[in-house]
Image (cartoon, rainbow, N blue to C red; front, side, top):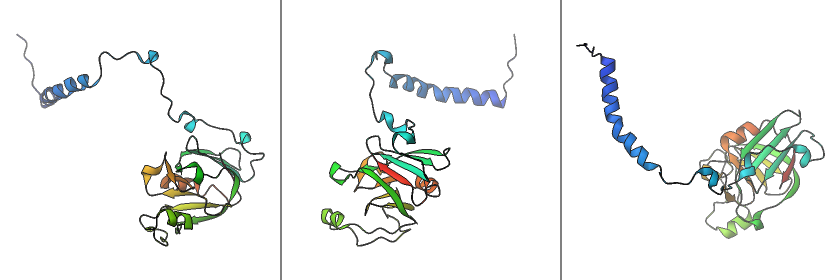
Amino acid sequence: MSKIKLTRRSALIGVASTLATPALLRAQDAFPQDEAPIETQIPVKRNISSFSQQRWQDHFDELGVGCLLADITSRAVHYWGGDGITYKLYPSSVPMSEELTKRGYTKVVRKAQNPSWTPTASMRERDPSLPQRIDGGTPGNPLGTRAMYLSWPAYLVHGTHDTRKIGRQSSSGCIGLYNQHVEELYPLVQVGTQVRLL
């Protein structure tokens, strides 16, 4: 008869496997056993083009100091640096409705760290409870930690503290980014960067 040496390690493994067995059995029940093979199912298309790399040449005549494309349909922001090498791609929030959406070419005319926010007259008309102003760095400031102002009045590319807005139609006209993304993009984008809202 062979002797089985019981060690602390083998005891712990035995106890762990005993405790894990019910969870493994429940996990097997969580997956349907009679589901059709995936290759026979119709694919669901959700924002497929969002993270497809694009070429700046398809949108701008020249690279200049850089180009920024806000693709409203796919809810993505593309940035090409003036060095011809730098390329960044970020998920974004977009305007809530077509009436609030402005499309076309513009450029970055000003930048601000911890920008203050003043709602426009039309925003206050839609929601009279909005404050007159929120100072930069204040919790709840809808412009987040960085803002890049466009030549169109009241249109910006900015951060947001409300991460639920990214990937959604949730803005009053601006293009929103996660704060960590706008902080990465901010030092790359120069005043004069070409912008297209598509």
